[in-house]
Length: 378
Image (cartoon, rainbow, N blue to C red):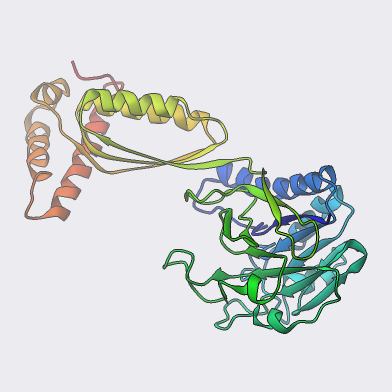
């Protein structure tokens, strides 16, 4: 029974420039660690080959050191690795792949399919039909030739491609690099291993996206896996098992505040966050000054306990009570300004002015609170 690991979208060399270096560097390192995990799993599960369906690298201009480090992570599995380029690392005339070969970084057990073709692994019971991307975007289906490809009888037909299965993903995902939705059936494939979609997803009984082995986006599409694929014989349905590989968990937390208990509930949720969490916090609604203080404290504590926390409070309105304003000791001009901003943020005729007023009020109140040692107003 031939057995494979199917993986894709390693995106090695990705730079998390939207994050501070203290967070971005560990996230980038986790991508290399995921590859070492895949090598270990390949050995533990005694697979015949590892299928890597494109976007091994995040860009063409990665450093030679990064290239060498990537191939060094493969040492944990001595069997064959079959790799195709994707849209991020397309097999251009001069590419990350030509650089890897030029510096001698590619191990002998790594099979690079830089051109379309059939690769014979008869000794292992299968042939691979590879459809690498030779440019970043194509508008024709590069897997179409699978339909007429002749392969020796008695061997599994395994397809390997990188692109978008047409008509089955979200409309905004359907894009260049199309793949026919019925390709596996039309081409008599026993299994079609796909890359490009970063979540783990089954498209039909023989077609899967493995997703990226290390999550990298705030999207709930089941990333962080590698697929173990077992096929009894040509024509038999594959048995596919998800195996977790991700180190970090990217999550979006959304909350709408209106009463004090909402703040308490959000604070409890943040307190339960784990060190491996990468969080996007989005808060809307209304809060008074004591609630704002509690929210800021909860966010500060969570920031210290997770890998990264980014926050968007732009839809949260500060609605201070008269007692709140009095507690700020904002007499004279400051008191008048706070009152004006409080009224202006409720303007329905000018939403943009209301948004600016709300933001200004929050900044001013926060500044005054910090000047008082961030104590809640009496």
